[in-house]
Amino acid sequence: AVGLEVKLQFKLTRIDSGEVLDSSEGKAPLQFVCGNNEVFPALEEGVIGMTIGESKDIPLSGADSYGEWDNERVLGFPAEKVPPDAVPGQMLRFDGPNGPMMAKVLNKTETEVMLDFNHPLAGVDASMAVTLLSVNKPPQVDIEILSPGDGSTYPKAGDKLTMHYTGTLAETGAKF
Image (cartoon, rainbow, N blue to C red; front, top):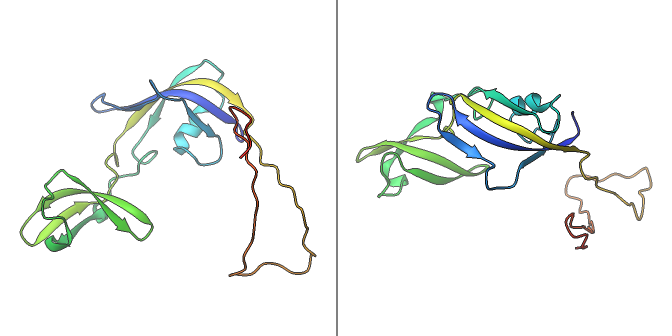
């Protein structure tokens, strides 16, 4: 249900080839809070109503997962802006305006390199086999206000706020 934390085992498989794209086998289970947009919306919707121990296949279209393949994300770059040893099929990392971006080298000439900035799985239809392991209320953050505001002054852009955190490790109860 929305607002609850779920843990599940999963295996993500391409529909067209049967290739396993990802799996929780040998790893910790997938864990997320329903309704927090932490996973694909189709996965969130698919687990709602499941019971603990239940298994289910959840279809994920390209649009439901990594997005549709977009021709506008294929761009030509001057060859001098790309590492000289880059070859078609290779993945390259670039610093983008919002952080790192990955691109696949499609082809290369002496003057231009065509790069595909689509996710490697864009447009790929997949199926996620899941088994629900647990459903719990998510951990809560307790907020203690040590000195309340006056109710008439409010922060504005550029103001600084000092916060002190005390954390507790869920596994051991140790404070940090």
